[in-house]
Image 1: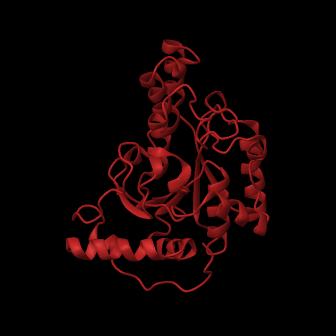
Image 2: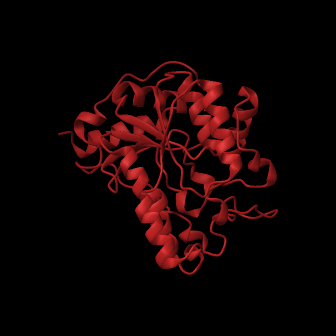
Length: 268
């Protein structure tokens, strides 16, 4: 078991790496027991492009909640064809959806925060739990400047909710960096971004933002900014600070064993 100080040093080292280095380390250490969970927003297609430059067989999972925009399905297909990748699609349990709609109606998520979280649990959290079953680590496209609930996102952490290492390789990127990368590499992206949808989820829970609004203002717009998480990234909804990584349980020793810093693409 590594010491508290060794854990902190490993986390600090990974924090200093650029996105391609984080991805290379993660793929070397965990593949194929590693998956990138993508909703196919701007950040996620950037990560997919970066992944494709290292391993075309890197695992990509997505959640088909049954209420996505048509434009989201369109970009999924364009990404699949462009990179020749297999996208593992996970849908909510049919009986759970039927029970939710029968008992609470079709728009219960607008009634109160508990009903909204229950809809997210059925359509997103439980399918993701199934998607991540048997893995050692998962990755996201989270960035620190996406909203008040994500300001402390580290590049590596222990996700206690799923019992896995969680990597956020572009946590330190700005929105400008994301879009510069998309344009430079002609990355397919969701056309709703061109219609002032910076953050895209289920169709009934997403609207365009107004000039000057927070990028996540269009998600669950009837709720307060500090409530705007669905449960997939619950650790960051509670505090605007990185979760500690020094505890013995935070990064398992075998997982966090040091690896040579990869050389390669220095882009961030």
